[in-house]
Length: 298
Image 1 (spheres, rainbow, N blue to C red):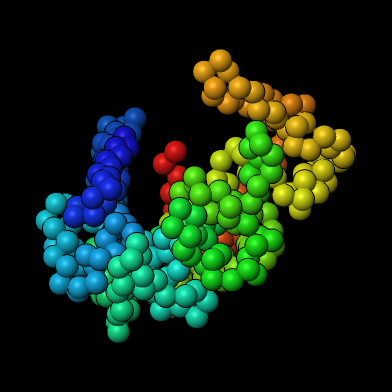
Image 2 (tube, rainbow, N blue to C red):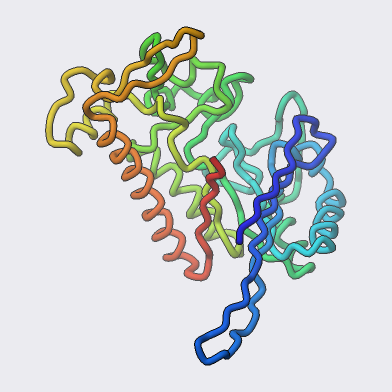
């Protein structure tokens, strides 16, 4: 049985923690022989954004690691690449995350390495988590896609009732997504995945935001071309042949499936599947014992 516990608050005076408890079952073979009880992983998630200010101090990290151990958890997940796309570890590929919501933190120590070292002292296994296809927060206009216009052509395109718009120009969203289809985006993500697995002795790697942002993305021209190759024909009316938007009497919009609705979502699922398979291959080639994990609560 899997139990998901989420303590989520906008008030950063509290920890944002996610615990996944996997309770072991007792199984008996036909002969009546009992299998030995194996301890299942019990996870505590340390969110990067909610704890950005709190974890500027090493003693805050050790304090909550002690609490984690005392509560019976045996594994932690350390979030080191939040929605902005910057890094809470020593990276050659990503900019360091030093400022969040107006609060600045300068460290002369490696955030991730400190977590790993202290977790080992407490016999806690460590998974590292990074967002994969996110690259900024539009409502605050911070993150990697705002550092340079080089990302503009790689940002996902949304299909709204009003038409097509780059996510960079849509301040209603929690995060900007890059287009998972593009080879340059995929290689960028694999680069920081490889870097972490090569540099840090971790037990698991959790892929977060490794998906499309919603049903309304990605409707860019490259995605249209790839989809047409996938189905072997041209789509005469794009994106209307995927779905259209319909407004009800209360003013709410819903999607109305078009002739290519199901193949479109099969195509998108294949895009994400192929990336995850490649990420697994890259991780296992470096550290075969590292467990690949996928975070997708919704």
